Length: 370
Ligand code: OSB
Ligand code: MG
Image 1 (cartoon, rainbow, N blue to C red):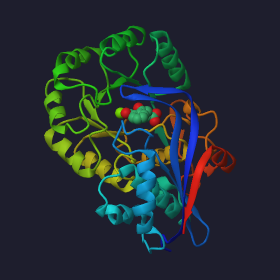
Image 2: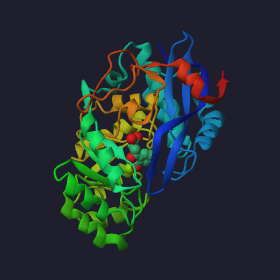
Image 3: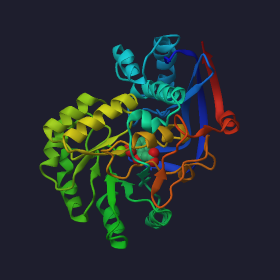
């Protein structure tokens, strides 16, 4: 059996989140993203999610650049081709620079299809052994401290295993202090989404007193060197997110000792194959990893959850359940978090069915390539 694709469909979806998600770089509520379907000659289908936002504030990609890359370059590279294994797809895409979220959208769909062809769960296809994965939650910037407490209370009641909050200049020390006053022991971390520079060293040092699990991406996305300088001067482990877009970035960060932890997002690195390579490299070098999120709907979440079954995902991920963000998800059953755990589905592929009635309702545009 080979991964020979006869049809690819790209859909653009628009889904309203329960509440706006606010970070140091902007706010999202009506989330637009892509769903890619690949179909083989037997009519079996695989699904991937194109998670780039409409605005290029997290990385340089957007939903529209993803569509362009898929249509004009990536789909023609795989359509009607005999591909032996999904791990070859990232090599096939090698001549296309970056555009990792566009690549991941179709690469993950090929992984799903491969697992379905072989009647095994995606987690098994990837080599994952866990039966359940631990989950934390990422809480965006809130209008008031009362609202933030409310969100944290709710997340703890739902059983999430750690709380991550977004910080930004002017809402950092005071925010973390306020959280620690009310929750002295909660496993807590802060994500800066690149909003500081080394000039903020005193502030970043001051955060050391609050017993944070880690501080995520304090400095610029392309500043692996400056993160190394910072890590030498603060006790809180640095976790890199935006800085790690490839295996080579991870290698550089490890060699320079820029971080103690890496947040792996398969979409940011071009797919599941590259995510697994980075995971393995980190494991060999005693760098802990956890699985990040991109406010995905169910398809993207399912891929993240499968990836998290690999052995070095030793910290709770950002893969909150479907109901955390969405009234109704595009998969069935929805991703469920119980006591901070997501059970790994046993069905082939991503292990969740597409809810086509929801998928159709949220689709604003689609095109098939054959
Ligand atoms: O920095 O991890 C981030 C969401 C969008 C873009 C970047 C990030 C995030 C999150 C939320 O923190 C993760 C999630 O719940 O999907
Ligand atoms: Mg982050």
